[in-house]
Image (tube, rainbow, N blue to C red):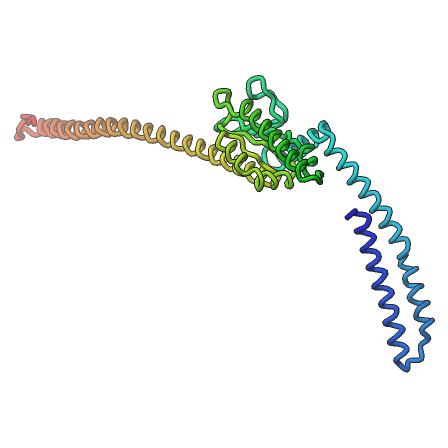
Amino acid sequence: MAITDLLLGVVLLGLLFVIGLLFQVRRTVAESDAGVETDQLTAALSQSLSSMEFGETVSRIEDRAGKIESLHDDFDRLLRAPRERGEFGEVQLEVMLSDHLHPGMYGIREQVVGSKTPDAHVETPEGIVAIDSKFPLDRYEQFLQADDPEQKRAHKRAFRDAVESQLAKIERDYVDPSAGTTDFAFAYIPSESVYYHLITEEYDLLREYTKRGVQVVSPLTLGHKLELLKTGAQAQKLSEEAEAVLDHLAQLGDRFESVEDEWSTHKRHVDNAAKRADDVDRALGQVRDAFDRIDRPEGNLSVTED
């Protein structure tokens, strides 16, 4: 159903409601003894609708519905042209990345995998996750629009072959840990309907390529996976920070042991010095006593040594 037809249907329902309300009022008044002229009520209701600019509102709705339908047609033509469709997928992908990740975590059309340039990539502690946003929508539309059963089967096979060819290319180009990638890459399909068809009709194909490192994702599932990648990067950062704290604590512990050893040595020296000071103090006392006895002839002049 066209958008214009849908909006006009809503307007017609509104008009039918108003007409029904008018007849209900007329019947109620006719059955009552209020003595109110139904023509007066009709005129009042018409005047109210006019003051509400009901006709102008309907006209504006029709005009906007036409604009929406035109915009829908333009958008539909955009998705049918391969170049514009690819650009739309890249723009949609960039918006999703900016919504889920910090700017330093991703890049758009940068040469990061050897000489290859993916549509986008995400930087993780394990390596680069490449994202390819190309998809054979034209083959899928041919499959949907075919009326003849034989042609429909042929277009379905052609669509499957095109998808498989693209998945194989992604595997060759972007699943290469020796070149700095992770052991998986994303094949982004910016259409939930196409994605649903693949997971229901071509599940075996998707499962096979998932084992080979190519994960097919839609806007919804890609958002979830980006959040997982962000969480993993944050967990890795926290782990690295925790290791740094442990290293600092270990260094502090080593330094503490060194200071403790130095303090033990100094304390031993201080204890020895204190003991020696006591010995010297006792000897000094003995010498003082000896000098005191010199002044007393009757005293003993000898100094006892310990």
